[in-house]
Amino acid sequence: MGKEGIRYAAKVDLNTDAAKQPHLHNRWHPDIPACGTIKNGETVKIECVDWTGGQIGNNDSADDVQNVDLTRIHYLSGPFEIETAEPGDVLVVDIQDVQPFEDHPWGFTGIFAKENGGGFLDELYPKAAKAIWDFEGIYCSSRHIPGVKFAGLIHPGILGCAPSHEILKTWNDREGQLIKECSHMGRDVALPPQPQNVHAGSGEGDVKEKVGKEGARTVPGRPEHGGNCDIKNLSRGSKVYLPVHVKGAKFSVGDLHFSQGDGEISFCGAIEMAGVITIKFSVMKGGVKHLAMKSPIYVPGPVEPQFGPGRYIYFEGFSVDENGKQYYLDTTVAYRQTCLRIIEYLRRYGYDDYQIYLLLSCAPVQGHVAGIVDIPNSCTTIGVPKDIFDFDISPEAPADKRELGSCAFASS
Image (cartoon, rainbow, N blue to C red; front, side, top):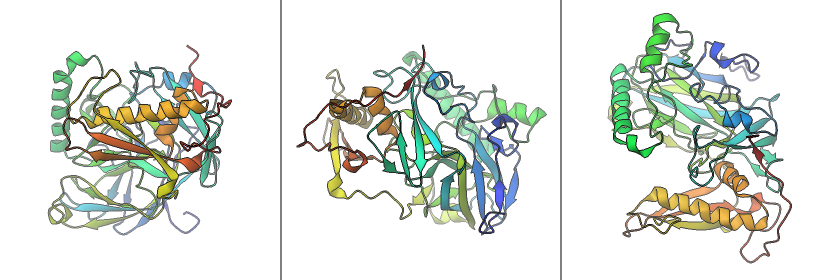
């Protein structure tokens, strides 16, 4: 039982290989056995490993990021069977608390090498890099990005219920078609089922083999169930409404973040951590029909770092890329350009581009779509809170160069 009498539905061992822990899994499949049962209306604590299963260390080298094995991710806690939940119901997930482990008060932000995962800006920043963040109560700071400190908005990057066999087939068919159509692009556009390093919880033999051949990768969020949506506002006090597709729901959660910026642009871009999440579960009978639900709904909680509307600097980006090419209402191009405007601005103070790229991924920046109707340009904005820096970054202030160290890079 927890300190408040709340029971632990799952506990993890950070010193044991995640692939050997039966209450963890790394694929979505309805046949992965439930690792436990939770009552309708019950509140439980669920421990989670970091999303890589402990592949990234607290050190000053990004060799581990460069060589991370992406066939192993994401390790999720679950699946949990929720009593009374049936297909067509909605599972209401009331996030009451999320915390790092007391004896593991650190996290990491990574930029994956372009040839192994990549990221939003990998055409310009193809090298692996890393920042380690130390937690001090609600605040975090990094020896790899000096001069910043901010409060975390701690949240799960992934939560969802298992797909039915029919929905799983839809995912695999849909994403398989995309892979075929985009084979000329020379990069991964989706990840098909991958038997290598599959972990099906307590499922072994034929079950594990089936999950390896059919199981959906955990990398994308999907409309039918949510999954890896990386929504930074799913913090304490939030409620998430998830469609149920199988008996018992088979809920899973993981990929805990101490903080994240909108977009999590470097892919491993939040402050990734191991920790424990406290959730109250309830079942809304017939909720999918009642809510006309085709994808999850959430209500954010009241907890969020407060900077005030006058304490941000907002940068604009448009559907014109860095080479001057015009695109038609392309918000991806616009958001990428917004990121580059911030990098250009902050490098004046002495940060290198990789430090800023890491910071934009994990700091509490506010990303918005400002306009998507004024042809040919979409306009996006990102607000950077001025108060996370220990020096003045206002446009009126002098941009004095500082000695601001370096993030961690790979040795080769």
